[in-house]
Length: 413
Ligand SMILES: Cc1cc2nc3c(=O)[nH]c(=O)nc-3n(C[C@H](O)[C@H](O)[C@H](O)COP(=O)(O)OP(=O)(O)OC[C@H]3O[C@@H](n4cnc5c(N)ncnc54)[C@H](O)[C@@H]3O)c2cc1C
Image (cartoon, rainbow, N blue to C red; front, side):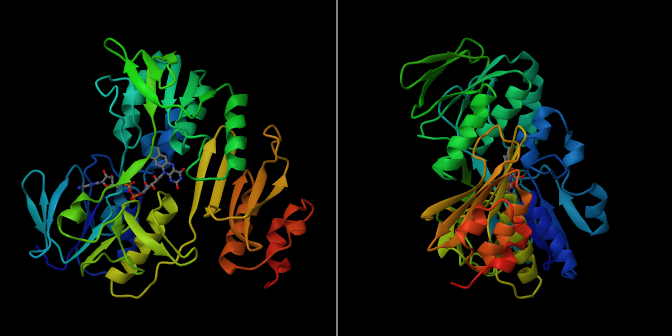
């Protein structure tokens, strides 16, 4: 076996992008892409959207056709879990006892859902991360009439939107004061909550879950305020933890994620990392961040590939994310936590099908935007944030001005 091989642990958004980019960079050696999942790599976001809704099948959401891996001479090892890394011997040890050598290593192991210590004995308490989860959920869907969702983050809300669209009663319980509290402004939180309420969902916020009770199946959720909610299934979507164990065991620098530098390299020569499992410095926001997004997984992985192949590229990214809920395509760009002001473009009324855009300003400059059914504003916001240019608030608000012309109306100060 070649010692020049690049082994990639994890064959999802980051792993697949990294492997493909390595070939584009002219990497002449073996590439092994290793996944502990049995499935040919697939897009993860549709799991809580079109796949759950039954609009698409797994085969329609593959990241690449199988043939493309063969054509690029990428050996795809499915159903194989790396148990440990031997960094001195440059070896991977698998759970079945087998070993394999590497020359360069990329860790793209993503994250794992956080669990609650309740109801895990019941088959109708669901978490959603993988294709195997969706198979279980889909077979139970026809029996669901009333569902409790624990967690009002993106996954919980997307699952809620799907369940409401197929007529299932939904109550969402969250300890937070507002929906999407961790990721966006209270303005968008209120808008999204109203969207769900208009579609018939109920919320119990600032409240935790004390018990999940039932005989053979979960039948009720008891909240910390004592309220019992009868149900025939429970979904839990309370966030993820980056998978850092493999890296920590071999002494790589790890904090909330595996720490990578500006070229996506870990603290060890020849070991790179990309995607949800990493933590890194973002120069645009002068901040150390972890991101759970397809954009970051793909872009960071491509950058890592360039550097593994001997090139020189710095990872400078503008984070962006999207979420589909009912007819609303919500697109977010940038980090809005430190914004001092919000400019609203469009009608904030949820029933207005033209959507709206929220521009977040800090020192009169746009640092982030949330757009609902506003692809042009989203594209314009990306440009404005990256160019660090200023744009008058009156222009941002003025619906008669085409967002695609914003870039021509900017000023330096
Ligand atoms: C339901 C859902 C909806 C989402 N919706 C959106 C969205 O709308 N927009 C968006 O931007 N993002 C969304 N995300 C987040 C996005 O999917 C992740 O940010 C992205 O998948 C990260 O890619 P990754 O390759 O870093 O990690 P992952 O996709 O987590 O992949 C890591 C892979 O590594 C494998 N692995 C882990 N450890 C080992 C090991 N020891 N040996 C072998 N294999 C291993 C895992 O099984 C997994 O297949 C969503 C996520 C979920 C779960």
